[in-house]
Amino acid sequence: AVKAAIPGSNGISGVANIVYAISHPQSWDLVAAALFVACASFILTAKNFLPKWMPPGSEVVIATAAATAFSVYSAYEGGVVGEIPTLDSDAGISLFGVIKIPVELMDVKALLNVPIAERCFDGSMVKLFITAAIFSGVNFLSIVGIASGFESDNDVPWSAPRELIAQGVSNLAAGAVGSAPVSGSMSRSLVSRMTGASSQMGCIVTALLWIYMMPYMSVMSPTPKAALSAVIVSAVAKNVIMPKKIMALKGTDFVVGVATAATTAITSPTIGFGVGCIFYVAISFVVVAPKKKTA
Image (cartoon, rainbow, N blue to C red):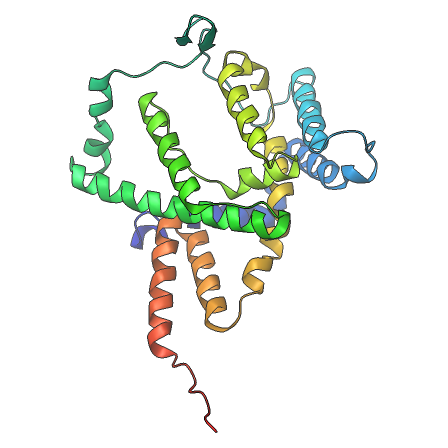
Protein backbone atom coordinates (compact mmCIF):
# COMPACT_ATOMS: atom_id res chain seq x y z
CA ALA A 1 0.00 0.00 0.00
CA VAL A 2 2.81 2.40 0.86
CA LYS A 3 4.63 1.64 -2.38
CA ALA A 4 1.45 2.26 -4.37
CA ALA A 5 0.66 5.51 -2.57
CA ILE A 6 4.20 6.92 -2.66
CA PRO A 7 6.06 6.36 -5.96
CA GLY A 8 9.72 5.50 -5.42
CA SER A 9 9.19 4.05 -1.94
CA ASN A 10 11.31 0.99 -2.68
CA GLY A 11 12.59 0.58 0.87
CA ILE A 12 9.28 -0.77 2.17
CA SER A 13 9.75 -3.92 0.11
CA GLY A 14 13.12 -4.58 1.69
CA VAL A 15 11.82 -3.94 5.21
CA ALA A 16 8.81 -6.19 4.58
CA ASN A 17 11.08 -8.94 3.24
CA ILE A 18 13.31 -8.73 6.31
CA VAL A 19 10.34 -8.89 8.70
CA TYR A 20 8.85 -11.80 6.77
CA ALA A 21 12.14 -13.70 6.67
CA ILE A 22 12.74 -13.27 10.40
CA SER A 23 9.19 -14.29 11.31
CA HIS A 24 9.08 -17.29 8.92
CA PRO A 25 12.22 -19.36 9.58
CA GLN A 26 10.48 -22.39 8.09
CA SER A 27 10.87 -20.75 4.66
CA TRP A 28 14.66 -20.50 4.94
CA ASP A 29 16.98 -22.51 2.76
CA LEU A 30 18.80 -24.47 5.45
CA VAL A 31 22.14 -24.62 3.64
CA ALA A 32 22.14 -20.92 2.74
CA ALA A 33 21.05 -19.95 6.28
CA ALA A 34 23.74 -22.14 7.84
CA LEU A 35 26.34 -20.64 5.49
CA PHE A 36 25.26 -17.11 6.42
CA VAL A 37 25.36 -17.81 10.16
CA ALA A 38 28.72 -19.59 9.92
CA CYS A 39 30.37 -16.78 7.90
CA ALA A 40 28.92 -13.99 10.08
CA SER A 41 29.92 -15.77 13.30
CA PHE A 42 33.44 -16.37 12.03
CA ILE A 43 33.92 -12.76 10.88
CA LEU A 44 32.61 -11.29 14.15
CA THR A 45 34.71 -13.54 16.40
CA ALA A 46 37.81 -14.23 14.28
CA LYS A 47 39.91 -11.54 15.97
CA ASN A 48 39.81 -13.59 19.16
CA PHE A 49 41.67 -16.57 17.71
CA LEU A 50 43.39 -15.57 14.45
CA PRO A 51 47.14 -14.91 14.71
CA LYS A 52 47.95 -11.28 15.49
CA TRP A 53 50.34 -11.04 12.52
CA MET A 54 47.49 -11.46 10.06
CA PRO A 55 46.34 -8.12 8.57
CA PRO A 56 42.89 -6.64 9.31
CA GLY A 57 40.22 -8.11 7.07
CA SER A 58 41.83 -11.55 6.86
CA GLU A 59 38.66 -12.97 8.39
CA VAL A 60 36.63 -11.60 5.46
CA VAL A 61 38.97 -13.13 2.88
CA ILE A 62 39.03 -16.49 4.69
CA ALA A 63 35.24 -16.64 5.07
CA THR A 64 34.60 -15.67 1.44
CA ALA A 65 37.22 -18.08 0.09
CA ALA A 66 35.91 -20.94 2.23
CA ALA A 67 32.32 -20.27 1.15
CA THR A 68 33.38 -20.16 -2.52
CA ALA A 69 35.26 -23.46 -2.16
CA PHE A 70 32.22 -24.99 -0.46
CA SER A 71 30.02 -23.80 -3.34
CA VAL A 72 32.34 -25.31 -5.96
CA TYR A 73 32.90 -28.69 -4.35
CA SER A 74 29.44 -29.30 -2.88
CA ALA A 75 27.25 -28.43 -5.88
CA TYR A 76 25.69 -25.60 -3.84
CA GLU A 77 22.22 -24.79 -5.20
CA GLY A 78 21.63 -21.48 -3.40
CA GLY A 79 22.06 -18.02 -4.87
CA VAL A 80 25.56 -17.22 -6.17
CA VAL A 81 27.20 -14.20 -7.77
CA GLY A 82 26.80 -15.74 -11.21
CA GLU A 83 28.38 -14.77 -14.48
CA ILE A 84 30.52 -11.62 -14.35
CA PRO A 85 30.98 -9.75 -17.66
CA THR A 86 34.62 -9.88 -18.68
CA LEU A 87 36.81 -7.72 -20.88
CA ASP A 88 39.71 -8.92 -22.97
CA SER A 89 42.90 -8.15 -21.03
CA ASP A 90 44.42 -6.78 -24.26
CA ALA A 91 41.51 -4.40 -24.88
CA GLY A 92 41.15 -0.91 -23.51
CA ILE A 93 43.14 2.30 -23.43
CA SER A 94 46.91 2.30 -23.91
CA LEU A 95 48.91 5.01 -22.14
CA PHE A 96 52.31 5.75 -23.70
CA GLY A 97 52.35 2.21 -25.08
CA VAL A 98 53.32 0.90 -21.65
CA ILE A 99 50.24 0.93 -19.38
CA LYS A 100 47.08 -0.77 -20.58
CA ILE A 101 43.82 0.20 -18.86
CA PRO A 102 41.10 -2.37 -19.69
CA VAL A 103 38.25 0.13 -20.15
CA GLU A 104 36.71 1.52 -23.31
CA LEU A 105 35.71 5.15 -23.82
CA MET A 106 32.26 5.71 -25.26
CA ASP A 107 31.69 7.64 -28.47
CA VAL A 108 30.59 11.25 -27.94
CA LYS A 109 27.34 10.63 -29.82
CA ALA A 110 26.59 7.68 -27.54
CA LEU A 111 27.15 9.89 -24.50
CA LEU A 112 24.60 12.41 -25.78
CA ASN A 113 22.06 9.67 -26.47
CA VAL A 114 20.06 9.33 -23.24
CA PRO A 115 17.44 6.59 -23.68
CA ILE A 116 16.74 6.57 -19.93
CA ALA A 117 15.06 9.97 -20.34
CA GLU A 118 12.53 8.38 -22.69
CA ARG A 119 12.04 5.27 -20.56
CA CYS A 120 11.69 6.88 -17.14
CA PHE A 121 11.10 10.63 -17.51
CA ASP A 122 8.56 10.92 -20.34
CA GLY A 123 11.34 12.02 -22.67
CA SER A 124 11.98 15.14 -20.58
CA MET A 125 15.60 16.12 -20.09
CA VAL A 126 14.42 18.68 -17.52
CA LYS A 127 12.97 15.94 -15.29
CA LEU A 128 16.13 13.92 -15.78
CA PHE A 129 18.27 16.91 -14.76
CA ILE A 130 16.15 17.59 -11.65
CA THR A 131 16.33 13.95 -10.57
CA ALA A 132 20.09 13.86 -11.18
CA ALA A 133 20.49 17.06 -9.12
CA ILE A 134 18.53 15.55 -6.23
CA PHE A 135 20.64 12.38 -6.48
CA SER A 136 23.78 14.52 -6.28
CA GLY A 137 22.52 16.26 -3.14
CA VAL A 138 21.52 13.03 -1.42
CA ASN A 139 24.79 11.40 -2.47
CA PHE A 140 26.80 14.26 -0.99
CA LEU A 141 24.84 14.01 2.28
CA SER A 142 25.73 10.32 2.33
CA ILE A 143 29.40 11.23 1.86
CA VAL A 144 29.13 13.78 4.68
CA GLY A 145 27.64 11.16 7.00
CA ILE A 146 30.32 8.60 6.16
CA ALA A 147 33.23 11.04 6.37
CA SER A 148 32.08 12.70 9.60
CA GLY A 149 31.56 9.28 11.19
CA PHE A 150 35.07 8.19 10.22
CA GLU A 151 36.45 11.47 11.54
CA SER A 152 34.84 11.07 14.97
CA ASP A 153 35.48 7.32 15.30
CA ASN A 154 38.86 6.93 13.59
CA ASP A 155 40.28 10.47 13.56
CA VAL A 156 40.32 10.56 9.73
CA PRO A 157 40.08 14.22 8.63
CA TRP A 158 37.95 15.15 5.63
CA SER A 159 37.20 18.16 3.45
CA ALA A 160 33.84 18.99 1.86
CA PRO A 161 35.36 20.71 -1.23
CA ARG A 162 37.71 17.77 -1.77
CA GLU A 163 34.84 15.28 -1.58
CA LEU A 164 32.75 17.36 -4.00
CA ILE A 165 35.57 17.50 -6.52
CA ALA A 166 36.30 13.78 -6.14
CA GLN A 167 32.64 12.84 -6.67
CA GLY A 168 32.37 15.17 -9.67
CA VAL A 169 35.48 13.84 -11.38
CA SER A 170 34.48 10.24 -10.63
CA ASN A 171 31.04 10.71 -12.17
CA LEU A 172 32.51 12.40 -15.25
CA ALA A 173 34.80 9.41 -15.70
CA ALA A 174 31.87 7.03 -15.10
CA GLY A 175 29.85 8.76 -17.80
CA ALA A 176 32.76 8.62 -20.24
CA VAL A 177 32.99 4.83 -19.99
CA GLY A 178 29.25 4.12 -19.65
CA SER A 179 29.39 3.16 -15.97
CA ALA A 180 26.70 3.66 -13.34
CA PRO A 181 26.94 6.89 -11.31
CA VAL A 182 29.54 6.90 -8.54
CA SER A 183 28.15 7.36 -5.04
CA GLY A 184 29.02 6.89 -1.42
CA SER A 185 27.96 3.75 0.44
CA MET A 186 27.94 3.41 4.21
CA SER A 187 27.93 -0.40 4.04
CA ARG A 188 30.91 -0.54 1.65
CA SER A 189 32.74 2.07 3.74
CA LEU A 190 32.18 0.06 6.92
CA VAL A 191 33.42 -3.10 5.19
CA SER A 192 36.53 -1.16 4.09
CA ARG A 193 37.10 0.04 7.64
CA MET A 194 36.62 -3.48 8.96
CA THR A 195 39.35 -4.69 6.60
CA GLY A 196 41.66 -1.83 7.58
CA ALA A 197 41.45 0.02 4.24
CA SER A 198 40.81 3.56 5.51
CA SER A 199 43.59 5.55 3.81
CA GLN A 200 44.06 7.18 0.41
CA MET A 201 46.38 4.33 -0.56
CA GLY A 202 43.55 1.89 0.20
CA CYS A 203 41.35 3.76 -2.28
CA ILE A 204 44.05 3.69 -4.96
CA VAL A 205 44.72 -0.03 -4.52
CA THR A 206 40.99 -0.79 -4.59
CA ALA A 207 40.53 1.21 -7.81
CA LEU A 208 43.50 -0.46 -9.53
CA LEU A 209 42.30 -3.92 -8.51
CA TRP A 210 38.82 -3.16 -9.85
CA ILE A 211 40.34 -2.11 -13.18
CA TYR A 212 43.01 -4.72 -13.68
CA MET A 213 41.35 -7.75 -12.08
CA MET A 214 38.13 -7.45 -14.10
CA PRO A 215 39.24 -9.99 -16.75
CA TYR A 216 39.82 -12.54 -13.99
CA MET A 217 36.83 -11.90 -11.72
CA SER A 218 35.00 -14.99 -12.99
CA VAL A 219 36.69 -16.76 -10.08
CA MET A 220 34.05 -15.07 -7.90
CA SER A 221 31.11 -16.40 -9.94
CA PRO A 222 30.40 -19.38 -7.62
CA THR A 223 30.65 -17.26 -4.45
CA PRO A 224 27.41 -17.70 -2.43
CA LYS A 225 25.41 -14.53 -1.92
CA ALA A 226 24.78 -15.71 1.63
CA ALA A 227 28.49 -15.31 2.37
CA LEU A 228 28.62 -11.82 0.87
CA SER A 229 25.52 -10.88 2.87
CA ALA A 230 27.25 -12.09 6.01
CA VAL A 231 30.19 -9.77 5.30
CA ILE A 232 27.92 -6.73 4.97
CA VAL A 233 25.79 -7.63 7.98
CA SER A 234 28.91 -8.13 10.09
CA ALA A 235 30.07 -4.63 9.18
CA VAL A 236 26.79 -2.76 9.72
CA ALA A 237 24.99 -4.82 12.39
CA LYS A 238 26.24 -2.80 15.36
CA ASN A 239 25.26 0.52 13.80
CA VAL A 240 21.80 -0.78 12.85
CA ILE A 241 21.00 -2.44 16.20
CA MET A 242 22.37 0.45 18.23
CA PRO A 243 22.67 3.63 16.10
CA LYS A 244 24.91 5.60 18.47
CA LYS A 245 24.88 8.72 16.29
CA ILE A 246 21.09 9.00 16.41
CA MET A 247 20.83 8.02 20.06
CA ALA A 248 23.33 10.76 20.95
CA LEU A 249 21.04 13.44 19.50
CA LYS A 250 18.94 15.52 21.87
CA GLY A 251 15.53 17.16 21.67
CA THR A 252 14.30 18.19 18.24
CA ASP A 253 17.47 16.87 16.59
CA PHE A 254 16.57 13.40 17.85
CA VAL A 255 13.03 13.69 16.44
CA VAL A 256 14.34 14.84 13.05
CA GLY A 257 16.99 12.11 13.01
CA VAL A 258 14.54 9.31 13.83
CA ALA A 259 11.97 10.60 11.32
CA THR A 260 14.61 10.82 8.59
CA ALA A 261 16.02 7.36 9.34
CA ALA A 262 12.58 5.71 9.48
CA THR A 263 11.37 7.38 6.29
CA THR A 264 14.57 6.48 4.46
CA ALA A 265 14.23 2.84 5.54
CA ILE A 266 10.69 2.44 4.23
CA THR A 267 10.93 4.69 1.15
CA SER A 268 14.23 5.86 -0.35
CA PRO A 269 17.17 8.14 0.54
CA THR A 270 15.74 10.92 -1.64
CA ILE A 271 12.32 10.88 0.04
CA GLY A 272 13.94 10.46 3.45
CA PHE A 273 16.09 13.52 2.86
CA GLY A 274 13.04 15.56 1.83
CA VAL A 275 10.98 14.43 4.84
CA GLY A 276 13.90 15.20 7.17
CA CYS A 277 14.14 18.74 5.80
CA ILE A 278 10.37 19.23 6.16
CA PHE A 279 10.45 17.94 9.75
CA TYR A 280 13.31 20.26 10.60
CA VAL A 281 11.60 23.34 9.15
CA ALA A 282 8.25 22.46 10.75
CA ILE A 283 9.76 21.87 14.18
CA SER A 284 11.80 25.07 13.92
CA PHE A 285 8.56 27.02 13.49
CA VAL A 286 6.68 25.16 16.23
CA VAL A 287 9.34 25.01 18.91
CA VAL A 288 10.13 28.42 20.34
CA ALA A 289 13.53 28.83 21.93
CA PRO A 290 13.22 29.79 25.64
CA LYS A 291 14.01 33.38 26.43
CA LYS A 292 17.12 34.06 28.46
CA LYS A 293 16.47 35.33 31.94
CA THR A 294 17.78 38.76 32.72
CA ALA A 295 18.92 39.90 36.09
